[in-house]
Amino acid sequence: MTSKIQKYIDRAMRPGVQHVVAVEPDDIVFDGRTLLKCMFGCNSWEKGPTCPSKQGFLKPWEWEPLLRKYKTVLIIHTHDKKTAQDAAFSIEREAFLDGDVLAFSMSDCAICNECAGKKNKECKDKTRARPALHSVGIDVFATVSKLKLPLKPLRDEHEQQNWYSAVWLN
Image (cartoon, rainbow, N blue to C red):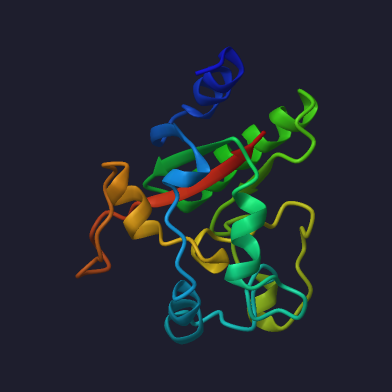
């Protein structure tokens, strides 16, 4: 592992972050069927700014060859969606400033307390909104299982959630 990757791991490890793991794109499990769960399992379908239903959004099978061009993927695990997104975006920004101009983060969006898209309004922060891993065809359950990280379907809304974000680095 390079010292630069270790620097990003160290930076991502902040309060609320449980794990940060550096992997290669081949360790990520892609499966276009994740789109079905978006279409038929998400009450924000056709509403969020990073929703795969948006006109011009790449299809899962279009994302995979682009993402496989990266060298390293940092997988960030938290129990809070906003913490996951903030950590990933922070690393994307730092990597960009370090010269990795194509560094790219992904996370379920938690920028706003209430998504404007759910009210059919424009996104308030399009420059920071990023797609969720599953919306681009990544099977999060299979990926994190392969990496021996925790994730299971919740039987009850009071169970502790596991949130994952990723940062794609060159």
